[in-house]
Each structure stands twice: as structure tokens, then as C-alpha cells.
Amino acid sequence: MLILGFESSCDETACAVVEYADGALTVKSDVVASQVEVHRLYGGVVPEIASRAHIEAISSITYEALGRAGVSLSQIDAVAVTSHPGLIGALLVAVNFAKSLAVSHGIPLVEVDHMKAHIAAACLSENPPSPPFLAAALSGGHTSIYLVETPTRYRLLGATRDDAIGEAFDKIGRVIGIPYPAGAGFDALAREGFVLATGKEEDFWDAYAASSAYRNREMYLPSPATKDGTLDFSFSGLKTAAINLLHRYEMRGEELNRPLFAARYTYEAVEAVATKLKLAMTRHPGLDLVVSGGVAANSHLRARLGALCREMGVTLHLPARALCGDNGAMVAAQGAFEFAEGHLATSALNGRASDD
Ligand code: KG4
Ligand code: ZN
Image 1 (spheres, rainbow, N blue to C red):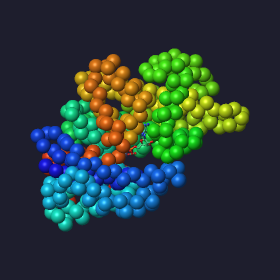
Image 2: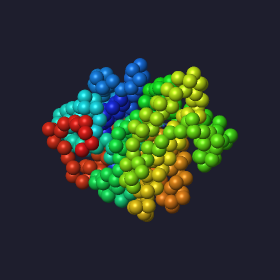
Image 3: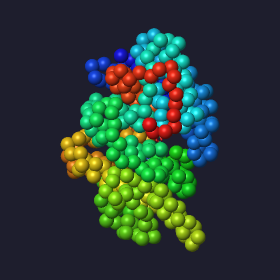
Image 4: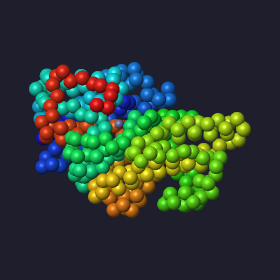
């Protein structure tokens, strides 16, 4: 079967055609119209502008996705769309567009949870995970750990109690002058810091933890891993401590070593994820792990979790970097799973900002 997937929950308008046959998913086309240039001017996503930009882009990217896949609407077996969570005005654009297509062409409509879609991105590979497995969705709005019981049934094991990991990179990145979204720039700056602190070009994680740069109390930052035995996070403390640290440097007129600061911040953020995922693996032994969402593109996180999973004897599934951020293929993939279980939406489908 062929699924047309739509995504407009934040600042990416996306449409993709995915084939689902004999239990395997194949991406036929995947078109993403990014708005980051527009929002960069404001240092973050402006919801009103996002909604308008989605409206401008959605028709043309649909033609493009169908054209690149070489299929017509009459060949599409289901239309899948992200209905939640996200910015409500932004979500409504793709929800209404998908609904209109489905109703006017008599195609079944499927609603998709954006976080499940992020995890389903890992199924767009040659070696997809099969449930049950553990999953972490690390994005601009979420830091959540799940037990994926079936392709459509998720149990939330832990989550952030305040800021998300991507938000923590974006907000502090903005303060140290990295353009929005700061994730990729932070990644590169931190790399400079790790190399500087260890003298090593790669495999620097353990050497960094043993380095004098990491022992420097002036750059102390707290761990976002909660200390209460849960699988929860709190990134607001890390963010506030970083802002205080930056103010301290400014007040003293001292120049901040930005790469060393970025390395320290990244180390704490990534170690917190590794700590909680290790706990999850210990509590749920023998399961594969999927890590997805925009922050799963982070090179340090990918390397650290690779090492952790080797140590734990766990198979790690990381989507290709291009599929970590928001895209339509992941929505179509989750849509295929929902459709296969008979989960169809009606023409009364609405968007909603909340997680459930
Ligand atoms: O999943 P996503 O595209 O959108 C949401 O659903 O939020 O995630 C976007 C987030 C942003 O916060 C962005 O800065 C972050 O992913 N990100 C990264 C990297 N690339 C993107 N964070 C850390 N390192 C990266 N290389
Ligand atoms: Zn996302």
C-alpha cells in the first residue's frame, strides 16, 4: 500500500509518499519545506508566522512529493497526518489539508501522534526494530522515554518535567550567539571544545571526563538527570545554571571560552540521557533501543549512546540524520502502522496541542 504523510506541527511543512508492503517500509519521496530562515530573525519559532508559511507551502510540496514518487492521488491508499502534539495553528494546516484530500478523493484518513512518528522514523531502515523495544524521543519540545509495546501502543516511562533537551540547546545557543535552531551549531562548537580539552580528534568522551577542563569548577553545570530513581529529566536547572555562569563571566569582564562552555553543556545534557537510558535498559533487559527526534542528530549523543549500547549489549537504532528532524516520511510510516490496525480517523478530525 501507498501512504501519503503530512507534517506541520512546528516549523517544517512536510509531505512524503511511503510504501508499506510485506511488513517493510520504503520511502518513495520525502519533501520538507523548512521555515528556519524565517524564524531565525526572531531567535525562535513565531507560531502565527509558522501557520501562514505552512499554508503557503503545503499544496506545492504535495505535488512535489507525488511527482517525485511517480504516483497520482488515485493510487494512494491512506492519507496520514500529524494531529498532535504541536503548535495548534500550525497543526491545523496539515490536518485540514489532509482531511480535504481524503474526503474529496475518498481516501481513508489516519491521525498520527508526532512523537510516535519520530520513533517510527527508525523503521525506515534496512534493519527496523520490532516491538517490544525501548525508545527515546529527543526533540525541541520533548524528552521522553517509552516502552513501545506494539507499533501503535506506547507506555511512557519518563519525561522532562520542564524544558526539553532541544529547547535547552536552542535557548542557551541563542545566548552565546548561535543562530536558531542552535542544535547543529552547538554540536560543532562543542566538538571544538572536546578537542581543545582532550587533544583528541575523536573518542574524546572519557578523556574529557578525566580532563582538567571538566574539573574546572568555574564551569560547573548540574545534571538534568533527576536524582529520584525515576526516568524523568529536568533541563531547566541546567539552563538557569548556564545563564548564571554566563552572567558571572560578563560581570567580571572575563572572556568566556565558548567551545569549552559548549562542550561542558553538551556533556551534561548527553550524560543525563545516557544515565536514564541505562536505567531503562537495566529495568527492561533484552530490548532494543530507538533514539529519535531532532536532537538524535547530535554527533556526541550518537557516539555516547553507541558506546553505552555496546557496553549493555543492546542494539541501538538511530534514524539517518535527515530523518531525525521533522519530516513526512515518519508520519507516513506511523500512519501505515495505525492503518494496519484499523485505526481510522473521521472527517471530524481536529488538531490538538497536547500530548494525548
Ligand atoms: O524533532 P524536531 O525537528 O522538532 C520538534 O519536534 O521539536 O527537533 C528540533 C530540535 C531543535 O531544538 C534543534 O536545535 C535540535 O532538534 N537539533 C539538534 C541537532 N540538530 C537539531 N540538537 C542537538 N544537536 C544537533 N545536531
Ligand atoms: Zn518533531
